Amino acid sequence: MEKTRERKIVVAVDESEESMNALSWCLNNIIISEKNSSPNSTTLVLLYVKPPPPAYSSLDVAGYLFGINDVVASWEEYSKRLVDSVLSRAQAICNKFNTNIKVDKKVGSGDAKDVICRTVEKLGADMLVMGSHDYGFFKRALLGSVSYDCAKRVKCPVMVVKHPKSA
Picture 1 (tube, rainbow, N blue to C red):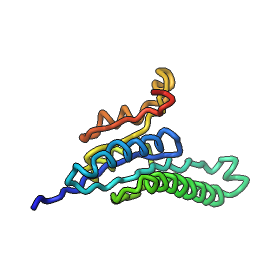
Picture 2 (cartoon, rainbow, N blue to C red):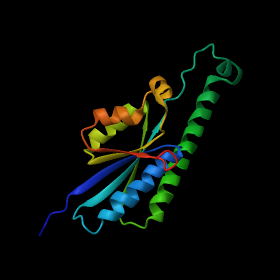
Picture 3 (cartoon, one colour):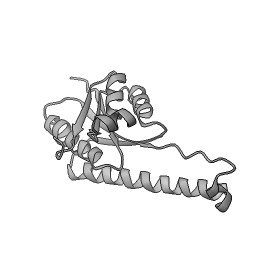
Picture 4 (cartoon, rainbow, N blue to C red):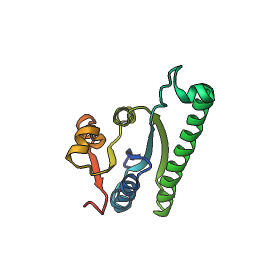
């Protein structure tokens, strides 16, 4: 009897259509197309990275007017709603594909490229799937490219999925 090895595919999701397109692409082209031919069980890890909370100084105008605790509480509530919204959208996409794979949701906080790379390494992921915002040269030079940085740093294969409009 052949022993099944669990395969982990991490899909980085955020508020963008590009990330949801990458998730759909992964489900359609990797999960569905291989489900009958692969003896492996698959866990799809949906990874959302929250930006770190803004740093406030004691002289910050918002903190002065509203009280720093109110500002921090508002940020945390907004962040929680955003996480719930993104992961609900991603789960809805997974449900449309009617697969029997295990879906695990993870939330990190900090610089996206660092959190994604650390999570992929920690999980021992077999693949990382990411959407591409397809920034031009100048915008990419100013902002950096999360997908490019992750592709250089992680040890597993990385699939960067372009949005159909930009393909």
